[in-house]
Amino acid sequence: MLKTIGSTSLFAALLALFPLANAADVRIVSSGGHLLNVFAQLGIAEVMQPKITSRNAIEGGINLVRDGEIETGLYLATDILPAKGVRLAGTLPAALQGYIVYVAAVAPGLSAGGAATQFVKFLSEPAMLEQWRNAGFDTPGSH
Image (cartoon, rainbow, N blue to C red; front, side, top):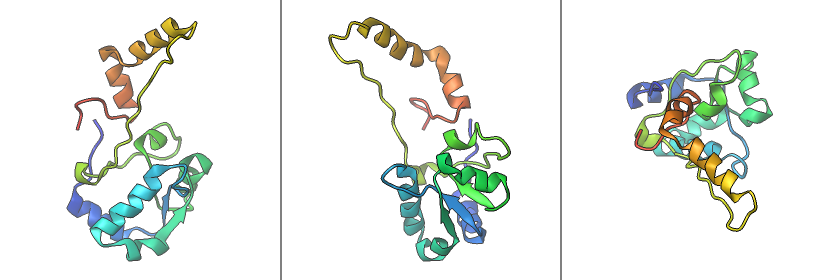
């Protein structure tokens, strides 16, 4: 299970951060826009804005943290956990989370529809839940 940062300590920690990397293009990565909304919800958007270096994780944002160019990165746990040279400090409290729900569908009438259906079933088997959690994903009923 991932450690959650308490809202009081989170607030103080956010205000103390400088500089901060965050997902940039909200058209591509919804978490960047969500985090800006969290800052607004906490009433610290104006204070945080000049501290933010906008760079998507996949476009080198996490590398900025790894290389010491940026002190902290706020990204999806699934982006941070596999990254070398950085560690996950914790997650936002549940009330501030913006969950991304992944679903799978199999188109009807495909010649490989049986194999696709089996693959989706495999991904959602109870035995796979621990692997999903270890990769930073929440699983059904975990929040």
